[in-house]
Length: 204
Image (cartoon, rainbow, N blue to C red):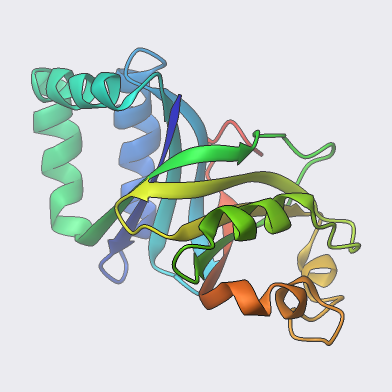
């Protein structure tokens, strides 16, 4: 099993059109026949003009086969790709191993956070285990934890769900007892983005 995190940086003003094309064209074409969609979000804080989509594949080989098959579908090429290419500035793909299996939040989540934590070289597995077993103690739900093996490597990806923005900022990530402080010997760099689930996201 391989999970794939795709992050697309869009041109300013392109978010609404991109989400429309994803919901009405891309997702119906792909269904679960071309990878399984796990989550789809729009950035609000941090990578504010980016979209985040998370897919699952049986293997790297099946993922490659899916990409080739999609190119043979006229609606994919002529409606979706033709529509989104003018909206995009760049794409980053991370292929990831699951460390903490995907767990939907117990209640409706109004805010998600994607944390991309670059590990000290040689300590990615140790960091991933620490992230997966640390409770934030703020009412949040860790949706999943992954370690990357292709694309940017030596990274741990954590997706967290919150009931609202107040819950996210109830506790600083920089306090002396915070998870980030406890992981500091394992961490080189952190990117974090707050996200809203798209209407077609399986995680809402």
